[in-house]
Length: 174
Image (cartoon, rainbow, N blue to C red; front, side):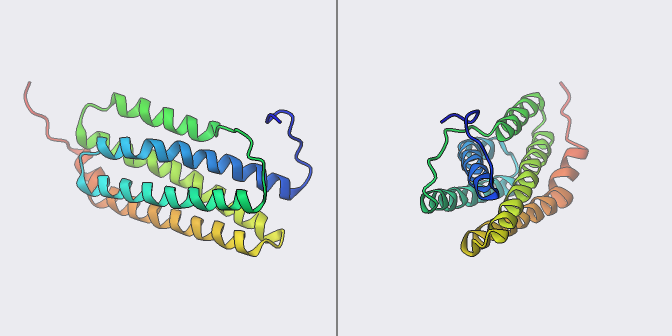
């Protein structure tokens, strides 16, 4: 059944559909984060992006477990939202020739993705909670909390190092 043929008539079906999209998002992001970590010049940013990749891997496993428990015939969905975030990030990074500015760009782009994920996990937790699905609601709420923790670390790194270096990069005479 294609996405166009799937009819969502209940909140439970909407949750299942969204979870399939989230799982796709996590797969797409999991593939890109190591590449982005390699592009970071700041060791702290590199380490944080790698830590985020580990978190994404864990969240992907949890989503796969939910899909299995729910016996969802996972639709082969690609998250167009995550695809757009990834393309936008790659496009911006390609334009940044200065390493410090590129780090600021990368951090900001990852934070945009992170904010999207905070919202999606929060919504999934709310849906699961109202449906009486306590265990999945807790998993989604925990994922939301972990995304917020990453957001806090990204903000701290941006404010205290990355953006300061990007503000006045060292320009060598050419």
